[in-house]
Image 1 (cartoon, one colour):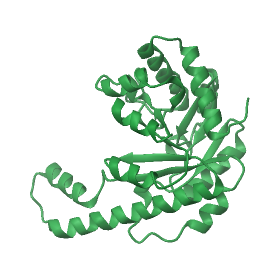
Image 2: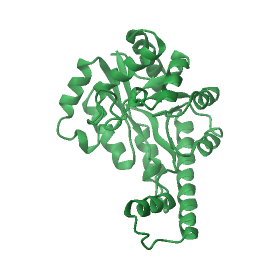
Image 3: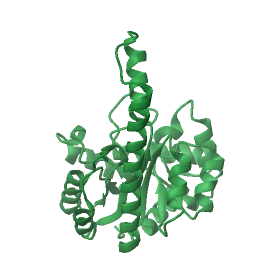
Image 4: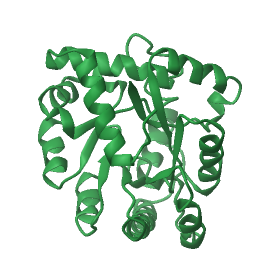
Length: 282
């Protein structure tokens, strides 16, 4: 059996054919799927899916890209829903500096090639710092909730490696770094802190040699696998909507990189997912 530890089944891409998507997952021996929350509304949706489908579990959390500079208080509502059955983790939470205002402004100017009027650099830097502070506050608050409820956490980080680790070190939680796209040294840094990483279809990409090396050399019991569906479809499905069935291709790529069987990868990553998230046996 395989476990897709990170998919977004509540996203609009699955609204028209979710039953068929889940049937294809079952046909590919994907027996458990964790549907990941991105904000409070998403938490309600993934919880409803977990109640409807036996093989689906859910998380509760606010993704850093959904955090606002003037973020309304969410702690009480999140605490209430995070205590519900089949909510197996707090997440996805963390820091994402990829879409900071200054970076977006630069990208917009490059795309337009017009040098259009824009905010000054000082104003953009102020917005950057305000958004970073809001993300950090939301991250800390949700890590504290995970400690309180003794729940594992699903970490999202993009272009914020050092700050993410600095905050995480202050909290006594079990974490998985989802969609790991770094190098072996970074993966080992995560493991040294007592946490796990999770690999997506990126391991099948031609330009992802460092990620494949990490998947090949890390201890087999220190990582999980995921799709991040509907994103990051693996080879040979590039360009298509990703779905949980495709986690099999990721497992196959890791097995090939390690020189072991698909069954060995499936058995250990499933055991790791069960232990980390507290999943029930089929």
